[in-house]
Image (cartoon, rainbow, N blue to C red; front, side, top):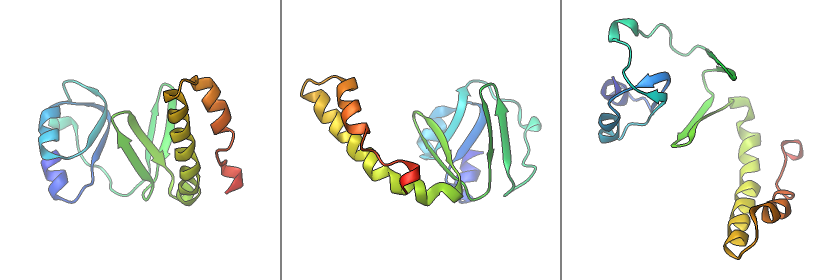
Length: 131
């Protein structure tokens, strides 16, 4: 399915469940994110029902609606949904966050504790109310 998705123009796949065949996805250089790895349900239980409609995810500790046009960003640590209407505001916040992270890392390398460095540098991070 990842081969078909990749060559159909999909940028990646996010599964609210388990996937298998990790090595095949890696060899395709096609990003796939999932809650877990294991045996997936047989294909007869899976079908595309709608395209470009809101997706409602609800599980213990999580309830979110992902709308068409929202940005989904994933890496080895997980996946984040950035609502389209918040994108400009969030992008404006990133430079001060990156700067604080870099300064904290430098301070830690010079022997300061994380708590000390964080207290000093995170206090200057831009907040959403300032954008």
